[in-house]
Image (cartoon, rainbow, N blue to C red; front, top):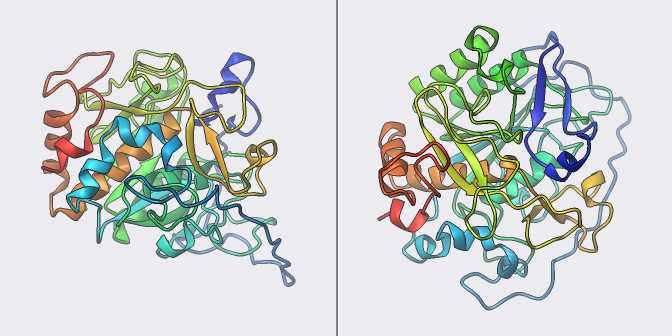
Length: 371
């Protein structure tokens, strides 16, 4: 049976993957993009959550309280790009995941209309509301509201987020729904399409078993979008689908020192189109600065042990991928095409145009890429 893996929460690799991290991908029937599979409950009582601010506004490059603890933004030189006005204005980053917390104060003002392809009995409120937490974390890394005096900063402060829910509350999803989500995003104006999910090794490198994903990624490319996908967390020498697909940018993870994270697959895919970005170490502790800070749905199990409600640290190539998707959004905001963006990533990442199997083209550099 095929597996779809959420490429985050790698602390689980120290033992066994939790239920929310690796679940069977079962074939499902579903309605057209944007429509629910099941009618919403006649009575929908939405749970209200409290969100902490993360502290007092800071005095750094931006005033988000947790910005000083977001080492990943400094590693990719994002503040230097922002200072020159390269922030992704007008771009849309689609997050294909467990949904996004539609009420999160650091995200709600950044959202454009999305779709829920896995609506079910827990679909309350209707729409691509996160019922897991993973997608909310990914969305915040890519494009959380920035310099607003609360929470975290996002990689692409000027970009908007398109939430496309392709994974359910347990993190399970079908290949059909993921492929449909890619096509939906491309058809509805997404520039960057982030996929922090994937197949397990061996199955994840066999094109005949992943032809639907391969075709969907090619479709997105033909529509002018660029798919950015997590390499995987199996310490495997190859990316796994969808990151293995032609025209997908495969993203491996680094720690706060810029070294390859121990769990990360190497960023090698069919077109050797791979880079690295911050993913963290996979700490056993909540709210550990060695991992990646971002937004979190307060109802998530991931947000159950820390002190800052609505924010948490996670680690994985799931976290690395939206750093690159955010940078891609910034480059779309500068008017570049998907082909030009790919070339820009190759030439300006830390290997300066050279490729190696461990780092790919290197750690992405927002400052260099936007000049």
